[in-house]
Image 1 (tube, one colour):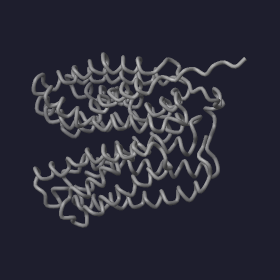
Image 2 (image 1 turned 90 degrees about the horizontal axis):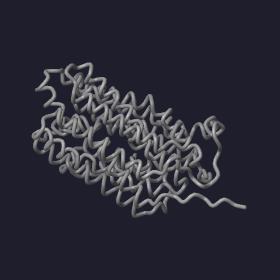
Image 3 (image 1 turned 30 degrees about the horizontal axis):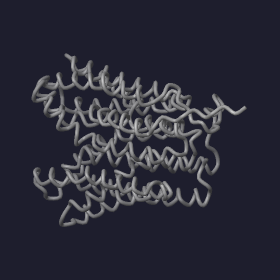
Image 4 (image 1 turned 120 degrees about the horizontal axis):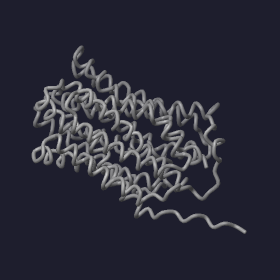
Length: 400
């Protein structure tokens, strides 16, 4: 007698629920200091580098925790991990809102960092792949489309709440959103102990699977591409206005021009979604690294209308987020996906945490143009690494 395969949860329930969670998870962590850093400094007198740098410390914690979180999700604990992430972010936001001294503020961000590791993209991608297996690719693409609205939605909300309630009230409100909205959405969307119906490597044996030989080279090349891409994106998100002003734009003009990045990200994800997975996920990654490098090259070349190179760069970062979730599925298959993506997330998140500070040091020593040249150099290097990755992968069948 054959046991019927468990019924998979509807993607029409899962994607919107996790999409709302991702919007607020990103908006209350990665995008929060952009709005609240200055009000916090004005109210407390704490040094601005510490206020902003606390996010970097949180991202370091997320990177350190990522492999363990991936391992737990690989054991079928995706629902529990994402729910715990929402709870940790709520706790961290409450600690920040109540912080009367700087060390407590930093501790709050460390707690948020744990939550980020457990409920941002990498964890969500791993949970989805554990449920849907090799068919998770279009679901991941749809989820990144939702996540792309985090800053357009949360920045105005944060500014409104700060004007109405102050920065502390904003943190407490967001803590309530993560606890009372996002956590229940995760519990609603994902079934407990959700597992794919197709056969997979079991238990501890699956966790011990290591990459070796050509597969090890594939893993290392992919990790390098993700790390360079993450470092570039985090640096640009922090220093973009400074770079544009160094190219001759006023602050108002720089803000206007930089605004094209977000819509370009969403547009590129819509185009990827329209393809319905008919092309190899590797070419999504190739398009991402090529567009990021081309956009920076056009900006350095002094393109008369900077909106064009930034739209190109934004489109690249948009599909980079998709490739981050779909390429490991293509290269290594669903059985080890959670463990693989957790291992790659560690250097990626650490690079994202450290790169903006290193870039600020370069600006202080050599000026913004030098930083832009360095970014172009590493993005061009990323194109070369991608070419090597394609050669290593060759014509092998995608992992099943």
